[in-house]
Image (tube, protein in one colour):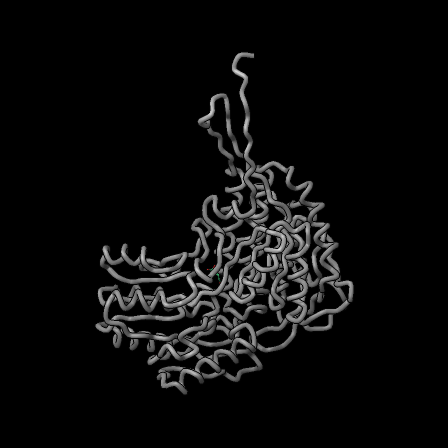
Length: 501
Ligand SMILES: O=CCCC(=O)O
């Protein structure tokens, strides 16, 4: 822990060594050159509980040089040794599950049960990429020209920068860092201002796992300095690869900046994901899957259900069931074990939710449930909200909601449903529920998204490629080969063989 304690910690950790509130560079815990700090706030109370360094562009060069120095050594380490570091890291994260869950609750606001869920999902990545490390392979060919041989080798691209969001801070880091470290790259992470402490806890455990100092550096900063720090990372000549998860607007800026130096980029951007529920669906199955997807982290997931299309034959029944289940949600502080839905993570998130509801109301939508902020102990709570009568002119029909607002739209035919589902610039995930196998296959092919849930609301897993199409970004994270490839270059060797030496 850096600096004398100014705030009272609202929780106790079993392993207090996990708690760091300075940046991590080369295995050292450091302050920003300016000495400035920002506050990390509990979304369930609105109260600051710790502070972290406000790094700016002038802090970037030293940190990146350190990551690069570490890369020159790390790239020589054998894949088996890299796998062993990843397995050890995985084990330490699992051993510290309780404490990491506690920090997650106080940074993101999510209920403790969801914090456990995130950690268990995330260790899937460390486990998976440990396996991937030893399976990175080139290839060889016998070409058309006589006496020639062609072969390829895969090499780590260099230092990667990760710009990560606050909604799943453990999962997003482990998905990116797992792949990078398996590939032999080092990584420098800029966490969101809302969630630096979870990321610093992971950096602490990475050092304990034996990763060389500088293999995983972390530079924290506040909302104000995020653009300049991120741009400095993207422009730094020793950064070879940038991976970003966040909005399409910022993703485009990242891509533009990186294009100046033709850097490799992976972009996981906005969702606006549709769900299509047909008359022949198993209603119970669709309900439980989509309910869990929609209200996970109070609706703050890029792959959440943003627009729920239900066929006319079951629309009323489905809505009635949904409303009844919604009534059972217990909104509260994430640390209260009765809580089933926490606050949204930021005050701007709660305000945006309110504005979307107000706009929809003004334009004629019907609000069945909720629609307001909840004024409780200074936290950023928003009511679980159910809306019908949404029309294309409403903001809520076109924007990512990122809050616990569910919009239901009736449809008549498959053709109409597909047209509406695809009527968006985004293409991250789509979901469909039907027992007609031909329709399922047709929709799997015709829905425009990088990931399609077929009678399921949760398709994220370490072993399946994660990523969108259209303006939801490019590149894949997780899955076999594809994710690690994002951190590799392919080098081609051509050899002329002297046959009669
Ligand atoms: O919010 C985006 C990530 C969600 C997930 O990995 O399932």
